[in-house]
Length: 202
Image (tube, rainbow, N blue to C red; front, side, top):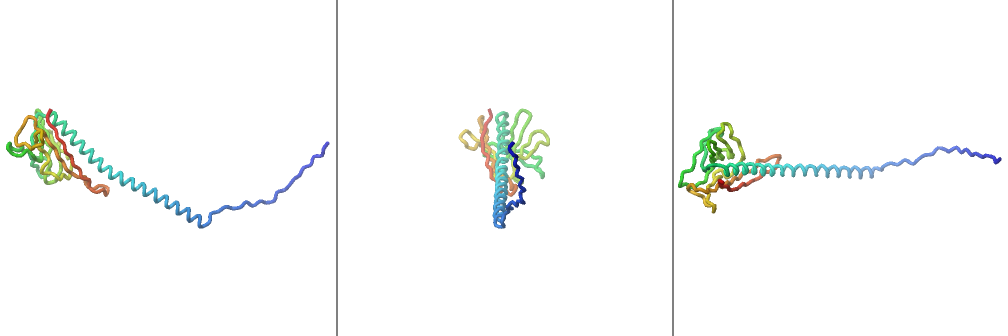
């Protein structure tokens, strides 16, 4: 038999090298972290600001589409319409429509749309510069736009060439021009809007 030789070695204590950051490395790391945080916060604030600006514009566009869509549908399907003025009470919730007389230039601040036994009135009050819509139903008055700047000339009755009429014609074209602005919101400056369209009865 071959002798079995075993070697038992007792390892001495081992000291592993300790790894640490120097003061200069720590300062550089903190500086980079601060720059990253500032960049992220600045980007988020810029995005929020752009969202607020675009929200104001989108609200104005949506408001304009709602006004045009409803008004055009009512003009297309109405029996008749008249341009005139509206004199309201102190709270602007009630008023009287007065049609422009024949022979006068058919341009005014109000529009009466008649259909069978019902009617709808769109008008701008020159005192508070708000564009409203009301119907034959009591309590239906509501504000469609605010801060109207062309309160004296909103509705026109025209011919096919765009000339303002002084009398009633079969194919009278209604022309709407509404200029208004959105009030300051979230610090965003007022946004000016201009809405202009024409329609006639079908």
